[in-house]
Image 1 (cartoon, helix red, strand yellow):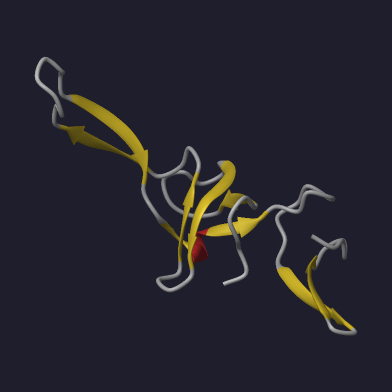
Image 2 (cartoon, rainbow, N blue to C red; image 1 turned 120 degrees about the vertical axis):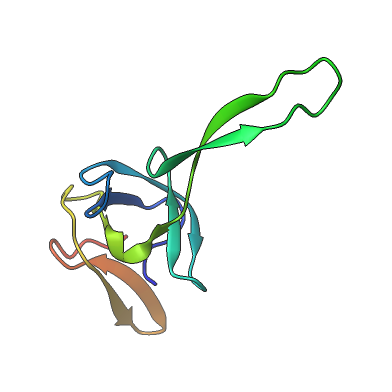
Amino acid sequence: MKIKKNDQVLIIAGDDKGKKGAVLKAMPSIGKVVVDGANLVKKHVKPKRNGEKGQIVKMPKPLDVSKVQFLCPKCGKAAKIGHDVSGEVKARICKKCGAKL
């Protein structure tokens, strides 16, 4: 999985198609990412202490990594990520504009 935490992504499938956001959490073992402000679900929370009220909280749910595409900070377009190995340093690059990330 080439998408990491704090990367800007564009959602390309599902109910939130077209939305942009930052990756809050990447889960490469299961192939999912949590995107800020996307795929929100309502969760009913019980009161913790005496006198507190229960509430309904909107929280982001993980999306499959195949439904998001990386947004290049340099060119601002949705692009694939490649790797450039120069010497002993391996760096991520944008495949559209060739900028190092």
